[in-house]
Length: 420
Ligand code: COA
Image (tube, rainbow, N blue to C red):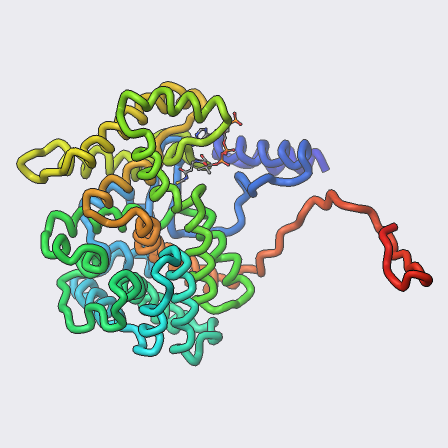
């Protein structure tokens, strides 16, 4: 057996991969299981790739920064779903398809508009995605690729509409409006004034693109795990949204802003960080399971978007409160790098994205829904890929650590069951 393992490992040419497999074997032998499934490949996928040591993220081979710099939402969505960038006529047709599909059945729209306004938008979103299934009689017909593709486009198109209806308490939200791009429509759901300004639409579009896909993260894993039972795409995307809501995943961007507000001034950053670390608590927006260097998405926002918003006074004027939050974040980055870079912990995308959204005057409780508007492209692409390759149902193992077999003791006198 050992010889066989050694033979297999010695045939692997990629040294990094070999190291990863050794680590997996050691973890299994030492612990008997893989906590948090860290390092365990569960699928073969062609959608995105991360080199966590070098800080590289690609979608279908293209570096994410190049896509954010040069592409539209429609381009990237088409790329993720279909495997390649669209030709020019395909691009226009695809944009049309997205904009046409944004309308929601009036009965469903009314239910969404009536949902309690205090319900967190992420749970409103996941429930509403499930509601959409009532307008799709063939939702369980999941084996035909073309049908799944059409459903994906329809879902991607309807996600901003759900948010627009709920946020504006209006079942007819934007039904008669015209939009030049899908990103413009997405921004319109949060800020109608800024949606008329090209520069803000561009920033918003870049944020959506940067969130498009991210290999086997928690929400994508959830989407694939649910779809592996041949559940409907609505069930799969709804569970991905629920997973994304957590503070260790997409929910971090909302909490980063709360944390910056709580710190209050750049002078208080050092004591805040030291306090947190001494209590063994985590700093929101810092660290990543895969990146062992700066997250390329975070770097793009920091270098290409934030300087225009916060440092180019000709372009945009931000108020003093927001400028203060930016300065706190800058100081926090310095202190976090000083205290945590030896553990290879760096700012992640959530650390910086919240400041861009805050500059757009979007309420922090909606921040994670914007992450979802980007990531739905990836979730649907994984759904399509999963259904195409006919992966096995996800059914991992556990290391049982509970009671051995024990028996019920029936006490005839008391007529009740006692513990052994
Ligand atoms: N602040 C301080 N310490 C952190 C940290 C953070 N944000 N993230 C990780 N660490 C430390 C842990 O305390 C642990 O230290 P130890 O080895 O001394 O015990 C070590 O780094 C490994 O952390 P762990 O939680 O096991 O890593 P993980 O891979 O399971 O978790 C995250 C990855 C992203 C969940 C984690 O870094 C985190 O919670 N970050 C904050 C939330 C966040 O920003 N999430 C958005 C991700 S895009």
